[in-house]
Structures are given as C-alpha cells and as structure tokens.
Length: 350
Image (cartoon, rainbow, N blue to C red; front, side, top):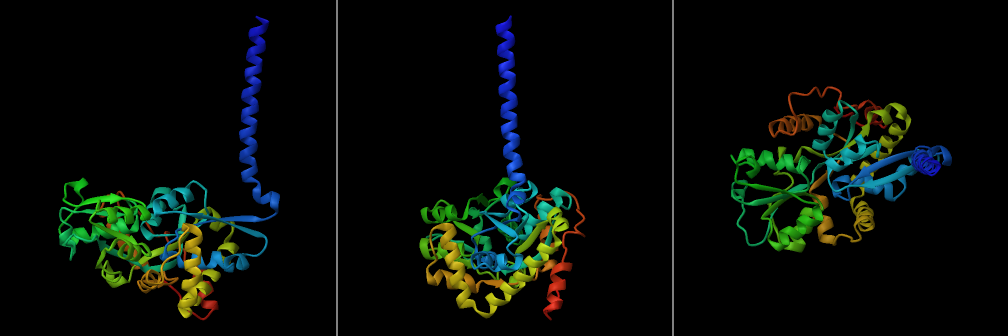
C-alpha cells in the first residue's frame, strides 16, 4: 500500500515538474523583451521583389536605425500570404509585408485584428507557360494545369478572375482548369518537368521560370488586371501591436516611405541590395537579366491602392474564400502614413 502511494506521489511530482518546465519556457519567451530591456517587433515578409522595402530596410539597417537601439527586430520569412496571416493571428508576428487577399481574409477571419497601414508594391506578377505547350491567351488554359503559390493568395484570386473573364473555372468546381498550389521554388521545378502547363507567380519567380525553365510570358504584369494599377503587396499590423506601440508603427512607416523614395530614385543601387538579401534568404542570388526584368514589372510604392483592395474583396466573395458581405470599413488605417507623408510634403494616400 505504501509502495503504491509512493509511486503515485512520485508520478505527481514528475507531472508538476514537467508543467513547471513548460511554464518556465513560455515565460522566458514572453519576458524576452523585459530581460534584454528592449521591445521586440516581429516582422514577416517574403524573399520576393514585391517586398522590396522589407528586404532593403532590413538588410541595410534603415528600419533598425529608425526604431532605435531600444528595439529588436525579429525577422520571419514566408512563401505565401495565408501562412503569414496564420502567424500574425497566432501572435507570432506583429507587422508584415503581404498580398492584399490574405490581408483581407485575415481581417475578416479575425474580425478586425489587423489593419492595412500602407502599400508596398503594385503589379509584379506574371502568367507564364511552359515550353512545348501552346498557351497564347487565357482561353488556352482550358484543360490545362496551372500553378499558384497558395490557395487563397493574391495570385490565386487574380487567376480565378482571369478564368472567369474567359468563361473558364477551376476543375474542383466543375470546370476544366486544374489549379495546383505549390511553393514558388517547386513551381519552377513543376514547369521544368512538364508537370504543370502554366503558372501565375510573383517576381522574381516569373523571370526565373522564363530563364531557367524556358517558359514564355503569356500575360505581363500590366496585363494581369487593371492595367497593372492594383496592389500586390501591402503593409499590415496587428491591431494589438498598433494600439500598444503606435510610436513604433509611425517610425516604421516613416522609414518605409524613405526606403520607397530611395528605391525609386536609385534603382540600380537598390537592385543590388535586394539581390544580396535574396541570396542571404534563398542561398542563391538572381542573375542580372532576371533581376532587371523582375524590377521592370513592379511599381514600388507606399500607396495601398484601396480601390483595388475593395475589388479583391468582391473577387474573394465571388470565389468562396469569404462568406457573406463583410464590413471592411476599418480594414485600412492610413492616418499614420498620411501624417508622415504630410510632414514630408508628399501627397497623401486614400
């Protein structure tokens, strides 16, 4: 009897000890900023040309300088928007560069727990076709396999809009076009092996697929939608972080504007910085011709092109990614960036 009691007591002690270890681990993460005496801002972005400001500002120290020595920047990279949104809503990142469609979906899903606070890039995505297949227009995608970076991301919605205009639809919904989600590096492999016929991808992947797999451009960046006048990357922030640290968000956006202006005034120098960061993140730099063609297809901006985002909302509803008719009246919070733009004598965004 005593042996049984001793055994139960020992088991109880082990359970309590395990719980204390877990709690201690969580506490160390939660109090990391307190231990170092610094505020931590966790930032998400992709190694894509459409996230140029993130790559430039994080690699050359512009954001760190703007935030000051009392702030630590923690970088997190992603392949596509839905994954980044999951991280933001789980409290794993605070601010991010992302496509507008995942931002919309995250806003609706969380009932307003994120805000779009600036734009980052317009256009910058292309539709490519593999070598040996005859695809000259959208209607030629009938019966074909088309890859996109992830279901529900900006390229996916853009593709479905194009299919709708050509009276085509996804095979999963009774149509004839098979839509295949895959990570950008895998799309390159799929195209090269002939496992998919076409892909709608952001730069630099469009240019890489053309060069490395011998693919051809079906639709250039200004032909995918709205003559290229649509946002493909915006800056988002969690509502909690915005409320807790409006000063840091303002400093970030001031730096974001400065970087945008610098990229547009010194494109050659900026391309070098971006390419160095891509090499750091992907272990491989872009060939000069790929870098140049990618950059030509992107408009680096701080304007979120709000009208295009509203149209993306409608497209998301039409394609079943958003249910009902959500209220997006508080999706944008442009007060901080407009304050910074006014102080710099630049035109505000709406």
